[in-house]
Every structure is written in C-alpha cells, then in structure tokens.
Amino acid sequence: MVMKIMKEAAVVAAGIAGAVAIVVASAAVLVVLGLVFFIVNLWIVKTGAGLLSYTLSGDWAVFAASILTAAGIIGSGAYS
Image 1 (spheres, rainbow, N blue to C red):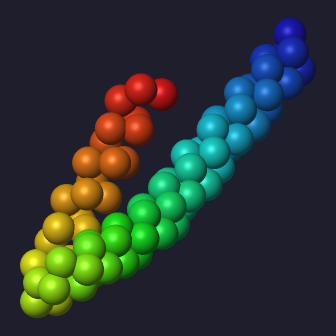
Image 2: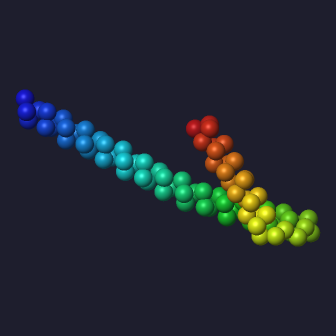
Image 3: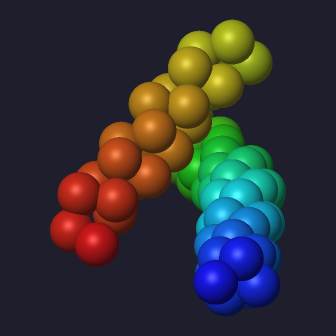
C-alpha cells in the first residue's frame, strides 16, 4: 500500500515538474516573439512615416510600435 502511494506521488511530482517546465518555456517564447513583433512593428511605423515624408521622433515611433505589438499579442491570445 505504501509503495503504491509513493509511486503515485512520484508520478504526480513528475507531472507538476513537466507543467512548470512548459509554463517557463512558453513564457520565454512569448517574450522572444513579442520582441520580434515589436521590432517588425517599429520598422513598419518608421518606414510608413518615411514614405509619407513625416518626421517622426523616436519616442513616438516606439510608442506606436508598442501599442501595435500589445494589440497584436492580446488579439492573437483572445482567439486561441
């Protein structure tokens, strides 16, 4: 009886460790993809401003790119 409980506890502990590993890995992937999306959005904002011959300061370009990135990440998470 005791051995059966110990085996079940080991299985549960392995399952919890696996779940924690998945959470950490998914958080790391989310951060990396967020940075990639931010860089792409920043390039799009700067290129669009340049095509329109609009002088855009760096802080407003970063602000616009951060809003676009946050909206994209939140919107993609809402449908998954």
